[in-house]
Length: 424
Image (cartoon, rainbow, N blue to C red; front, side, top):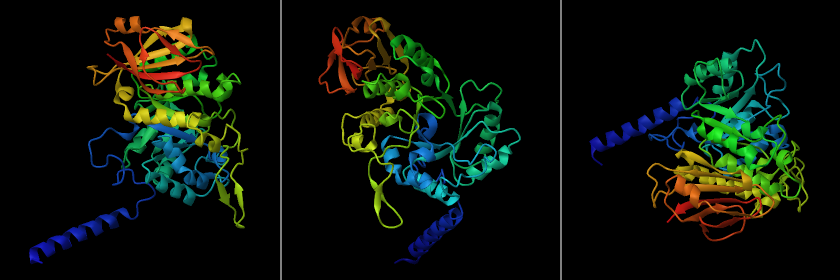
């Protein structure tokens, strides 16, 4: 081997070793390191259109943080870009401590490290901090462990947190509440819980809420469920069509321009804050015996095990929508126009990309919010919008129907979501 080439290889090896040595002391997830999706590329920031999965470790798994780490593949299957941990402190007076009931700081570090291998960040919900909290020390405690940011209610504290988080390497973010009056630096995401306040499943109730969301110029994180909020399955379900109704709400959540927050359990129709009903798999005990984690009857439809096995389940509908949320540029960036069919209890909107064409068609989302089939015509709606087309090619739908829909006359079954591309 020529001497010059040998020297070059030695120099390259030394440089690699120095790089590894420099990064060795770094704690938990290094948000700017190789391995992250888009590292080294001029790609869109990860928080521009994410799906955030919110977890209370006390209810998600009997094993707390370790249980979350064991279920990361499940969370990843929902398209989650980040996990928002809530209620990890022992009480309101000790925001810098970790509740021993859910694990140790080592468990948190393991969760953060394992999540990063799946390109998922770990965020912490600080809620409303008590007066006198040393925000600088608190933030640095968690940011030094590699957490990717915080959700906080107080706008002044959100302002201070953004300054602190901005001094760290990687894309650390702050999630603040909507309309954060008083803050000088806008949080990267504003939590919008307006859908969580809807108590009536009707087009007249939902349309103005979705219209307001679609016209808001801020970067929103939409939530239909969350801590301290009556779960949507109980709030809007009728006891007979709960899963179908939940599919409608999932479409409203995941087909908007905004980012989406999924509160653990809503993806299977959980109606209370009872422990997550996994059903299976079994987990080993220290004695070597095996028992189910949060047992659920094999035939219980509100369990992960039952819905994993059902292609048409609510859980798999969430997975389809999340895949579309991430892959379809029209859904992530195109403006929306609501269609007015309140008289038929139909919620519908058009996502129209710039330069719409046969190869880059608008998307039409149609939700029948009634318990009967609806016969619908969208021909006049498309003409008013100066959109060319005479039928919708199916992208996904929540029922088992097949084939395209003609604009002149289409039938949408009860509590069904239909998403199609406008074609001609």
